[in-house]
Image 1: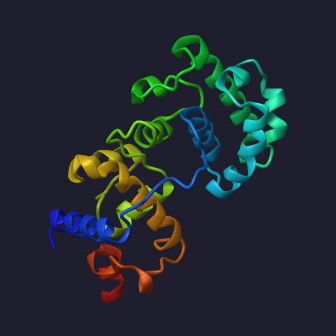
Image 2 (image 1 turned 45 degrees about the horizontal axis):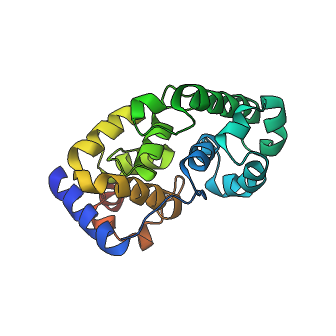
Amino acid sequence: MSRKERFEKIIEYLSKHMPVAETELQYTNPYELIVSVILSAQCTDKRVNITTPAFFKKFPTVQALAKSSSEKVFPLIRSISYPNNKAKHLVGMAKMLVKDFDGVVPSDVEELQKLPGVGRKTANVVASVVYKKPTMAVDTHVFRVSARIGLALNAKNPLQTEMQLVKHIPKNKIAIAHHWLILHGRYVCVARKPKCEECGIKLLCKYYEKSRIM
């Protein structure tokens, strides 16, 4: 099977069997999403969703957060991984949004990356989820799954994976493909022991093909 065929068949399958694929982070506006995505780095969406209701009650707007301090933010996110750094990033992000962007979360990936705590992955998530841009955020699930099933070949880092995926996935499918890969990695193609027996794309997967030979 050629790489082109693998992409086409996997996209065809996921389009049919997972027509709706969305972020599992709970949010109501761009401000809430960018906060949630910053908090989700090396932390589960479930833990973030438990934490954010109290956070957004205390800081309902970016302006409210910008007027606060990391010392006041920390107690609300102490159960999240790396709370000290994230508290500083959140306040810094809010201050810059208010000062440089009139409190509006930008849609441009490069502009987003100017914000404290916002790397390329976070920027791509916000641009994709909020503004429906064809950006591919590569987290640990996407990085692992893309390599394992044979969509990304010899990628050494998330950026190389991102470049390969956006090159081979139709532009109108990139945003949802990000969620397909995340959800597939979270619930089926799990890190330690992938659930190949219940995987709908196993016959298209390089890992499964090799495991059968072995």
